[in-house]
Length: 280
Ligand SMILES: [Zn+2]
Image 1 (cartoon, rainbow, N blue to C red):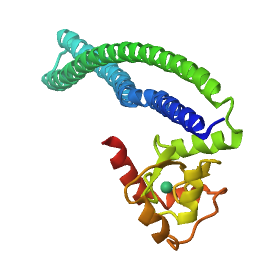
Image 2: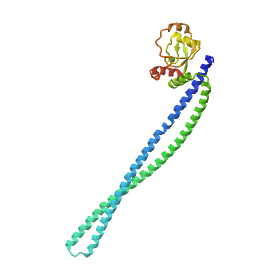
Image 3: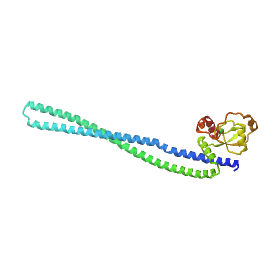
Image 4: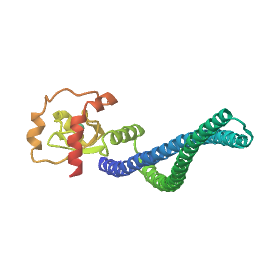
């Protein structure tokens, strides 16, 4: 294959791989949209459970007060009945006191019952609202989940289509070159093939040694930038002639074939420049 054809294929592949990588990232990020809604739902459910516990407690307190009230009523009524059968002033006074005490307790327990009843009604209303909110939130979440599944499926379908193109284009390429090319596109956000212009890599803006630039110019083999690992192609520049011989000792080259991920990490500053250029 003529080198220019290889470069052309790589450029097409670059477009396809960038789109594919973007879609893959989008698929991964889609479920995260649900996190906030899921948190709200969990909070609502927790609050409902707490209210329910409080409701049960209140209900048992209410029934205790009701029993106490009934006891007091019973005691008062019994004492009132006894009023008919007393004979002495002393008996009268004792019974009268018994009736007043029982009536007092009755009054207090009636207030207690009423207070617990109000609390029950409030809790009941709050739980009713909570139930409505939970149902609404669950409905929204189910709807959004279904939408996300559809979006995911659409994106996965696009990825499949892109992969068909990718396979067609990469068929004639050296698998090792393709592997490195895909990796560099993933690491450098979309650009895996860049021009060398005036002896400078337009991907990372590093000056490349003259003999290196010459290899790229002859176009006989695929050459990776020793600094940013991108594939280089030659592009004519006005300053080329001077640059070629001026850049002979421009720093050391890293191993051309085995650029590992640590080295990628060291290049963040360069990446910013690269991205800025890319967005223009
Ligand atoms: Zn470079």
